[in-house]
Length: 243
Ligand SMILES: NC(=O)c1ccc[n+]([C@@H]2O[C@H](COP(=O)([O-])OP(=O)(O)OC[C@H]3O[C@@H](n4cnc5c(N)ncnc54)[C@H](OP(=O)(O)O)[C@@H]3O)[C@@H](O)[C@H]2O)c1
Image (cartoon, rainbow, N blue to C red; front, top):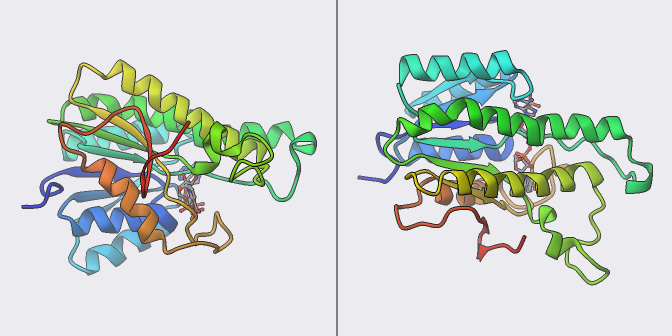
């Protein structure tokens, strides 16, 4: 039996891109997947596509910037499934386009943090009672190599070329948030890690990169970590990524 069989997983922002690929991969591994989306039409269409392939996938409305929507999603999971084994905090935005940090609009920074950081925290807090009700909850926060201070600092750093003030710093905050939750949950079976999917061809990357299924594999690996797996780290294809 696969490690995913019988598990209930929520993926936020799963109507497309890496979130959709993660939902598909977890469902193919045997999980019951709650495909989270803020747009009902897009969410229903995506869930129906996976369900028509015989997978146990259900659309769950969730806008991570809307407290009521998050609470309604948690209530529905409590009523219908009674627990949550896996939470993939995947939903994110990256609205900057070719603007250097010196010219970045603070409102754009606020908007980015609203989804990528505050939405992720609010979703995690709302889902924690359900994750505690599972035997061994797993939380995976979608991050990026662009969040790494080591990989972006200085002229010679591999990602120094990327000057997305709002997006990159919001994901650095996601890394810090990951550590904070992991530390609080150290004495529980719950593991909290951040995933670096690498550059994947989605709307967020303007279609550049590898297939989203390859990035999703990183998140799925962290979602299915065994008891002896790590917590509080950032991981990519080749193992741990420096902060
Ligand atoms: N693509 C890459 O190369 C790459 C690299 C590193 C990390 N990542 C990370 O991987 C994750 C997925 O990115 P992606 O490339 O698949 O992006 P994407 O194709 O743009 O998908 C983003 C998803 O997030 C959803 N979303 C945005 N705001 C939301 C909100 N307030 N509530 C609920 N859902 C919301 C979007 O919904 P709508 O369709 O309604 O907009 C969409 O489903 C993100 O965390 C991203 O930072 C991506």
